[in-house]
Length: 495
Ligand SMILES: Cc1cc2nc3c(=O)[nH]c(=O)nc-3n(C[C@H](O)[C@H](O)[C@H](O)COP(=O)(O)OP(=O)(O)OC[C@H]3O[C@@H](n4cnc5c(N)ncnc54)[C@H](O)[C@@H]3O)c2cc1C
Image 1 (cartoon, rainbow, N blue to C red):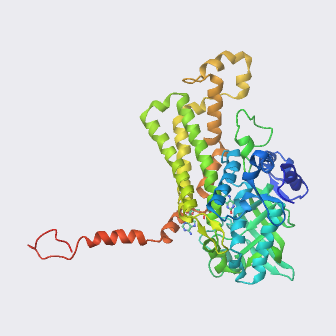
Image 2 (image 1 turned 180 degrees about the vertical axis):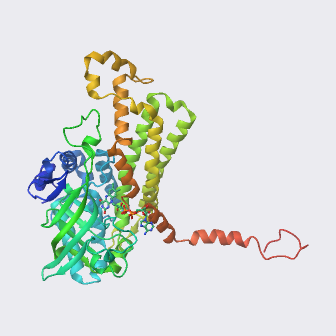
Image 3 (image 1 turned 135 degrees about the horizontal axis):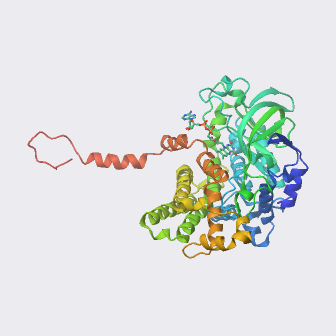
């Protein structure tokens, strides 16, 4: 089939009714529902970009076997230039949403590439699991499907393992000739309502006893028995003006709780089953973190550049960038952006070979960026809020600007240092959509948590460190002291 168009993606949603709940109502056709249609259109626009002559070669690759094009995120890299080409594809899609769509299709497509490259890891439990990984990678790539995923058991009681919590968490409930049956809940499926498929695996840290919960598999979003209950949307199409909320009216990614009611999963879609060890080790034995972090840091670079650019524009609009402490804050933001650029480049320079002979970006710099962002992005947003200060609370609506009776006032009193009123109002509204609205607060929460608990992630950096170079320097410095000398001996002789 090759790469899809936006229309094909939307048609796919319409022709696969699902059990999605939002605002107390069941929605069969998410593509045209006011809670989801805006973001579905944005995803459709990404698919369309794959066909645009100026982007086609960056966003897609030619499949040598089928002669069809596939999304660049599926394409294994052989050289550093291939990696850079992948990054350029990620950048193009990320900048289309200013980095605000955290879960554009390329994110999980990189996960599938990682599973496929290291499918032998799954094959250790039986060749059929490796075959299933290969089949699924090929299936998603050839049909250019859009995946969501849900890895975490819902927050019921974090002091207990899943098997100690009755029937709450997703688990295997039965096995048949053709496959398995699964029931229970998982959080959070960002864009789950408008996805074609849901990928399920576990975060590291599973313990013996949780065998029924150790499961790596995939199900269609329309699978019978799979229900999605969405959080309350921040934006309903038609209720807010684009002038007042230019970002949230386009880029809100809804999130859902997945509830599985006796869902059947054929063996072809089961990649690991009742294997606590593998479920825990998958993160470390495949390139999943390398590939996803390469995509997601590229996306984060767009988001950080955008937020920093807004902070600069807001500061300049009122002349605040002439103040030292504002310059200091803007310099701090630019520093984060430069860190991202440097880390991505180092990941390419220090790229590693996978077991299957392909190339993956180096993990250490990417993981460092991933653990920096939960602090850096909220900080940039705090800086934006601090620079705009009370001005954000002052802005009239687009309807006010269009009201002739008060036009004299609105054209006069909102002007900036160098900006006419309308341009300053536009700028401040754009910035507040990002920094203040519920939509913007979710984007902060996203950067804090989307890659797992930031506390345990940073602790993990310490636990996994190769400390050779650290110890070498400390040992060399310790050697300077030499042996203890009796009192009165010549000082400073050392060893
Ligand atoms: C906007 C958004 C979108 C998301 N999208 C997705 C998605 O598409 N797919 C997906 O799978 N997930 C998604 N997530 C979920 C994300 O994976 C989790 O939020 C993340 O793993 C943290 O888990 P939690 O939220 O359950 O927090 P918890 O693990 O419940 O943590 C709550 C608090 O308790 C502390 N804590 C809990 N357990 C421990 C422990 N054992 N040791 C030390 N401290 C502990 C944490 O530090 C934290 O402060 C998303 C999250 C957000 C916010």
